[in-house]
Image (cartoon, rainbow, N blue to C red; front, top):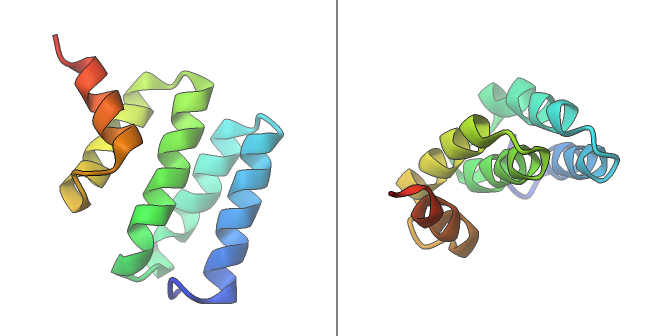
Length: 89
């Protein structure tokens, strides 16, 4: 699945819609079930969707997992930087 493909856009849209309906676990599951088909350039957007869903659901462990994955790819994402900074003692 390529970043500019309709298929990827549909997965992200569906996940965002699930988040909008407060089905955070469903939003994460949808992205996670499609990760194996995604090319590496899709991962930032996919991980961000999971990060936001986990954060909105109060799933701190899952949000932290995705924040660390995102930081490994791009350490300058503002929401991720703020989240990780807030976790440090």
